[in-house]
Amino acid sequence: MTNSNIKISVCIPAYKNPEFLLRALASLATQQCSSWEVIITDDSPDESVHQVVQQFQQQLPIQYYKNTPAHGMPANWNTCYDKANGAYIKILHDDDWLAQPQALEKMAAALDANPDCDFVYTAYSNHYLQTGDIEDVHCNAFYQRLLQQSPVNLFQRNFIGPPSVIMHRNKPAYRYDVKTRWVVDIDFYMQVLQANPKFVYIDEVLVNVGISGEQITRDCFRVREVEIPENFYLLRKFSLKALNNIYVYDFFWRMLRNLEIRQIADLRSSGLEGDIPAPVRQMLTLQRQFPLRVLRIGVVSKLLMTFSYLFRKRL
Image (cartoon, rainbow, N blue to C red; front, side):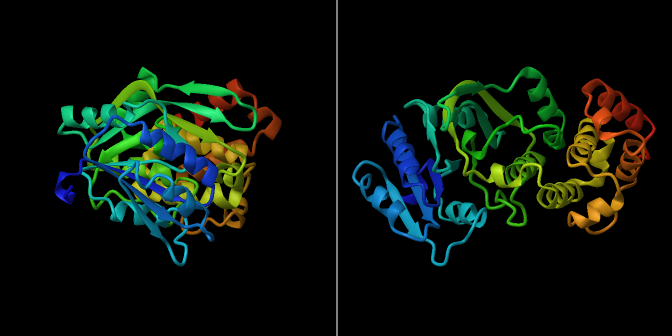
């Protein structure tokens, strides 16, 4: 098959986890799909991933690349994208797997049916590997409307999900920002939907997401030195005026509260450089008037946030 005939590139940026990759590739081997390829770029320090890949060389149209030296996350994701020949890219992290044999075909069909759309995402199941619990995650109508209104509403919550639940057109501009780690997926969704705000949501579980204790979330969640610089970087990247959006304003209010940021000095010690937007200064001024135990009362915090928002300095 020539490169011009490939419709779907399944991109797997791998790093160790051979047992998880085995499951991911096994799910790909069941796909009722034609005109596709599987690209694997390997950041592992050993041959464990390559050994798994070799088991599927006869079953799957795999192209395997070893990164020497390792590129790191998310540069490895971009490396995988750079090697993709398909019209559509389906990123699949090595600890995730497809939920049904028609998954790739259904996502590609959604893009086929909507030629003015670049982006599709799907419902998914979280599989908690330590407990065995399974949780189906659907994007309700309210969040779909928020996404239609503006991609910056993703600050409020990542209601799309992890990268494995998406498929998008293969365009050189659609790459992951190597300056990010904690917000890397949100940043990517925002840039794609800013370029083309049209999307398709498939309300059917097509992807299984493995949740383990080794994921990046465990290293970054509620860590000031990670969350503060990256979220402010994302805000500045897409416009400080996003703070005029109540959902974005509410996100930064909650972040400051949850990370116990009380002073400008706390922002600086967390690694934030540059000017601090006036609305954020106002948030801090008001939050300092109340003990944290009071701010953690949901209804009280929401009322104070609303008051702060109504009387904010507009940008």
